[in-house]
Image 1 (tube, chains in turn blue, yellow):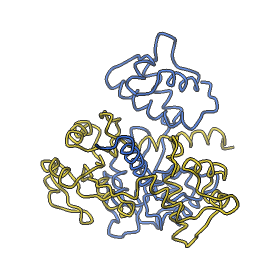
Image 2: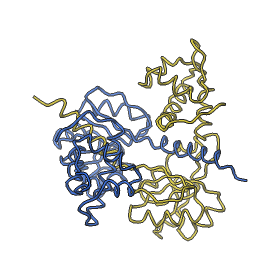
Image 3: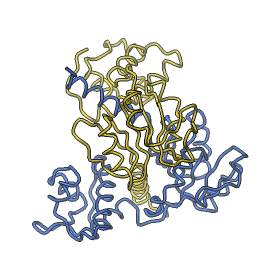
Image 4: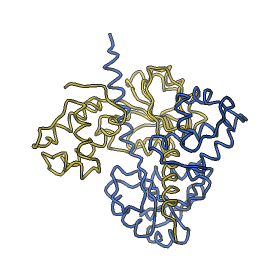
Length: 215
Length: 215
């Protein structure tokens, strides 16, 4: 499959296409036009055609897309056809919430362990995933070939932990701490800054109230 | 302050400016040039000037920005100068993790209650925030003037709950369910789709590995 330089905006939309196509497959839909997909996703049909053309285009004019094929091809682009071993740093509520997501495994993300400093948690497990102490982190990352670390620590501890993770060979950090991590160029970071998402909601509320003053 | 039509990309960057300016204030910095801010934030100085010019511009050429003033003005744009009452739907790990974030209150988001269907949780509380049963939802939303509902339910229950929330007068939903909610045009939704964020990380890993094949 031909692949060109792809914009960030397109990449952000791919997981959404993937999710919708997965739902269509579950509902037994085999083929869909960009028009129908557009209606369901509230994206224009031309946007969809344009996005998918970035990857060589998967449809035929007037014939629509093969749902399963498109789903699998987008999966490959997203790297979901490969297995990714993952650990969670932080056994608090957020760490446990992540450990409880069954969906991650369906997408190829295997949570191999949870790490914490709290000795009370030692040996406990969440959905069969054991909580380990930090002293085992280095060997665990090597032995279990861990690629991704989900970082659910408070801001104050996130930087020091990041240095450790990088030293132990972690190549990708899924960061939930409210801080921009400083990492070498060969380490990838994806941020989930929850309070920033809430601020965007608040911006939209404020904007909406200005435009629709109550009489 | 003059306010023009602002692009989504700018709005996405505002919370980050806000966070950085807050950190500068904590460190006693009173004034900063766009150049310095740029270095810290890994955004170009011209991007910063351009972004802030959307709101009339807060700086003077060669003199830099007043940190506290800029922080407060961005806070106002984001609606953080107002109080927002919030509830959490779902008392599981994710709901409890959200209830434990002290930072939300600092930004004007007050979590007034948590709602769940599990009678075992009835009357329990997280950081002083009580867990209520669903039968109290309607009156609670009215009595406590709840504006925002954080939805931490599984996909299968999210749609029905959304209909209830809308009927009970909720105007903004912070959605953690892996589904795009169908709401009337006067109800605002901000999505946090965790698995989509993880897929973006996976995309970047795949891309990186292609560009840097191991020898």
